[in-house]
Length: 415
Ligand SMILES: *Cc1c(COP(=O)(O)O)cnc(C)c1O
Image (tube, rainbow, N blue to C red; front, side, top):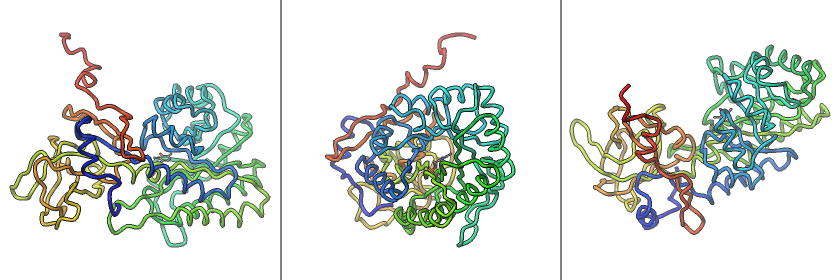
C-alpha cells in the first residue's frame, strides 16, 4: 500500500462521467519509474532484459510502454504470443515459459522465433512433434526445496513446475545432441517474495549449475532467467523490495562465481507483479449496506473483477475517496454481488463510514487482477484505463457488453 493515491476524487468523478464503475486504472508514470529503476539496478549486466509476464496485465498498451525500455514478454499461451507479436515484440524478445504445452502453442512460439523454456524433459519430444528443436533453448529447474542464508524460502516439492537436477542435466545433454547451440537456465521458486535476498540466492544457485554444466557437458549457459516472484507490499506493515540492493546482490554472486569461471551470462527476469501490481487500482462504487450478524458494505465490483481476495484470502488496501483522513469507525466486510460467500474484498476491515455512492479504491490490483477476471453469475468484465501524467485517461480495454457475453451462445436455437 502507498501513502497517498496518485489521483483525487475529482479525477475519478471526471473519469466516471465517461466510464461506468467498476473500472481499473493504471498509473503510467508509476509503471515507467518502476521499470526504469529495474533496468538501472541491473545495468552492470550487459545483456540484462526483463521479459514482462504478460499474464499479470495482458494489455497491448502496457506492453508497448514496457517495450520502450527494452522489455520483452514472458508468454505461456497462443493468445499471449499473438498479443506480443501484435505489439511488435517477437523473436528472442519473447520467452515462452509454458507448461503442459499443446503442440499448436509450440508451433506459434517457433513461428515467432521465441526462446522456448522447457518445463520438463518430456517436453523435448513434444517440441519435436511441433516442429524442431530451435538453436536457442532454456530449461526450467525446480530445486525441490530452496534455502537462502536466512532459511527456507520455498518448498518446491509440490510445485508442478520445472525439473529436478538430474533431468535438467539430461535435458541439456539431449538438446545438445539434437543440435541446440545456445542455452539458458530458468527457475522460479517463490511467489510474492519481499526478501531482497531472493534473486541473489537464486542466482547463486543457478550460476553454480551453469559452471557445472560447462565443466561436465561442455555446454555454455548464455543466460540465467530468474523469472518472477518478487513481491509487493500489499499489507500496511510490509516493506517494498529494494530493487537496487537486489541488483547489487546478483552482481556480487556473479562476480563470485561467473567471472572466475571465465563465463559471460545475461541476466533475465520475468517480473509481472513487481512492474504493474502497485500501479493498478480497481475503482468501484458503494451501492449498498447491510447490518445483520456483521456489517457489510456492498460495492458494484465483484470477485469477477478481482479474485485474489476470494481465492487466496489476499489483502488489498481499501480507501474511500474523500474520506482518506476520516476516522476508521466501522468494521465491515466489503462485498460484491456474487452468489458466493467468498465474494469479499475485505473481511473485518476498519474503514470510515461508507455511504451510498462513495467511491472505493482497491489498491495494488495492477497485476493478476483484471487478467484473472471471469464471468460467473453473468457479471461482465470491466474496462481498463491508463492514467497519463496529466491525469487524463485512455481506455485501453473497453468493458465487456452483454453482447460479448452472449457471443458464444446460439441463444435462439432449440437443440
Ligand atoms: C507468473 C509467472 C511470472 C510472473 O510472476 P510475478 O510473481 O507476477 O512476478 C514469471 N514467470 C513465470 C514462468 C510465471 O509463471
